[in-house]
Image 1 (cartoon, rainbow, N blue to C red):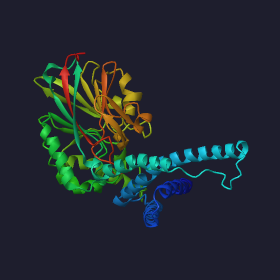
Image 2 (image 1 turned 30 degrees about the horizontal axis):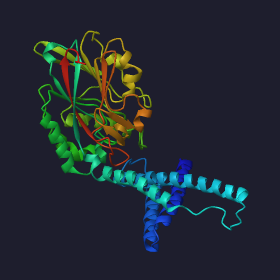
Image 3 (image 1 turned 120 degrees about the vertical axis):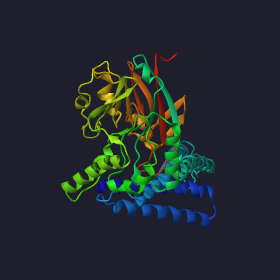
Image 4 (image 1 turned 90 degrees about the horizontal axis):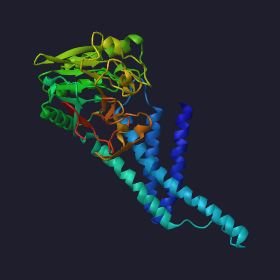
Amino acid sequence: MLYRFLFLIALLLFVEIYSFQAFRTVIKSKWILYGYLIVSIGVIVFVTYTISNYDRRVGQTQQSLLALGFMLMMLVPKLMITFFMMGEDIYRLFSGISTYFFANDNSETFLPERRRFISRMALIVAAIPFTSLIYGITKGRYNFKVIKQDIFFPDLPEAFHGFTITHISDVHSGSFDNPDKINYAIDLINEQGSDVILFTGDIVNARADEMHPWIDTFNRLKKPAFGKFSVLGNHDYGAYLEWESEAAKAKNFEDIKDLHRQIDFKLLMNEHVKIEKNDQQIALVGVENWGKHFAKLGDLEKASDGLAKEDFKILMSHDPSHWEDVVQHHEKHFHLTLSGHTHGMQFGIEIPGYFKWSLAQYVYKCWAGLYENAGRYIYVNRGFGFHAYPGRVGIMPEITVIRLNKGKKLA
């Protein structure tokens, strides 16, 4: 941990030196440069202080969220500046060598001066992620989007043709700081008028009490005709904190499970329920968290005990790596899996229907939206809340409305 901390500080100082070179080349006012240095040093001190005093018994706080936001706002743009400036330094080095050995230049300066054009270009390019990260913190994190998705199944029971599901995931209530925005999101969910609401985990960052200020808000969710159901995510097990005892950790876990009851969600713990409509049924299966990078607590066999391959099944499993590694090849044929977890890394580029990119795709094959294999589908929700970085850039908080259709999708 100490080595990582020292590496981070060294990296911040390294990019700061290069970035200052770019500013100094373009800006000649000493007072502006002094102001830049004061702000940069202030951010480094604040980030260093917050990280060095991070308390794993408390976990994420508004201060730690802010510190990470400041760090990214400083680090990402300045890494881009450093890329430009180091590239120019390589050019200056080879230019100096060439001049010294082959042009018989006896000037006292070995390296050519920095070119103002390169510094300007570096600052212009760096302004793009800088302004994007500011937007992500001030606006993007609560810029809720309703995404509607039709999925077609030849073996869907006729009574469920047109059946609608509102899917939310990754609430992370411990990160919230704006009641008006959360109430707005609750109103958006209610406006969809879906047949059922499904929540695929991470109600908190780590502690049950994070949700206490928001219980009344989430109780405003209208209960649809076929109910509200939920499962647990990796953050719901208190695994990212240091607890004073195993008993305290166990009590927190029980309290987190009870939060679902308090907001009128039926929590499915490796079990299933039947949803009936016009004497026909579909099975809703819910498992505990199963993750490639987390404890594999989800028990698919137990949850689906008594179900046949022919039964139409919707699986709620927080982490999409469960589908990637197990579910899509399972003999019982789970028709649709609903997941979350990735948040789309809360940073990326997305043009709906045409293009999407995020660092998340290098960790998860299924990281946002709809995926299919052999007639089995997974939908990965981009997340309702936010965690670590206190914002969203390009990958917005999502409320998904899925409509089930009987038949095959027309080409």
